[in-house]
Picture 1 (cartoon, rainbow, N blue to C red):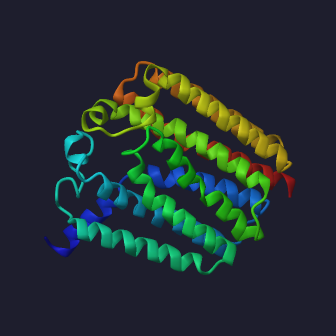
Picture 2: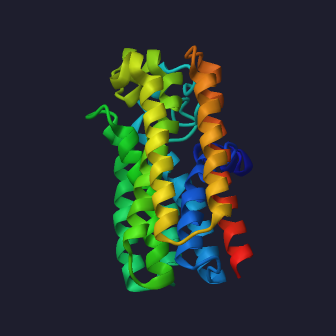
Amino acid sequence: MTLSNRLREYALLMRLDRPIGILLLMWPTLWGLWIASEGRPGLLVLAIFVAGVALMRSAGCVINDYADRDFDPHVERTQHRPLAAQRVTNREALGLFVILCLIAFVLVLQLNMLTIVLSLVGAFLAASYPFMKRYTHLPQFYLGIAFGWSIPMAFAAQTSHVPAVAWVLFLANMFWSVAYDTAYAMVDREDDLKVGVKSTAILFGQWDRHMIGLAHLASLALLTLAGTMANLGYSYYIGVLVAAGLAIYQQTLIYRREAKLCFKAFLNNNWFGAAVFAGLVINYMVTR
């Protein structure tokens, strides 16, 4: 295999061709940074977190495929991934994971000690998440914790402490993650049942749509509470209202539990996160 082909396989392993994961991790990170800095994040901090999101999401994809290397060949949607198709070796995957994590850690070293300590917890969450689906039907909650850990890190980087509003925002992201990742898991539910992989889509069964709705509702309520705690204005709440409309739209997509439409609902959550962030940006622009 030529060097260019090998690099292409590494890029596919990191899912750089599918940036939705980066976006779903980026939005809550930006929520945290904007509230922590009152709309004026430091440029260095912003650059480090944006780069860190891309690096850690890529690392998460690599370790996820390593953890699922015995399952993915039996799942239609994943059987052509580089590790599943044996175009990349296990050793290469682990080496790439370590390199990505080290680069991210070097970036974090530019920040304060509290952020560095929190980053170690974040690295553990990212590395351990892929293995949760073997032991619990709640890996989506663990994903929410892992994806939301950037929120307390953002507050730590900007303010050197983690206030209560950061944890409310963290919980809002956790429930949002449960909502969109359950829709994602609905796509693979039949294959997952065959290979023994666990998920909230399997746990919730016929109540899957209802539980996604409740998770979105919990997220929206907590986002509203966070806005109150941070003394945000009407622009932010308009963004939350738009996100609520998108959550309702997603219910129409998953109504018949068709795989393609469930995946479309999952992708639509990019706009949910963007709507909340847009509300934050406009809020701080108006109040300056």
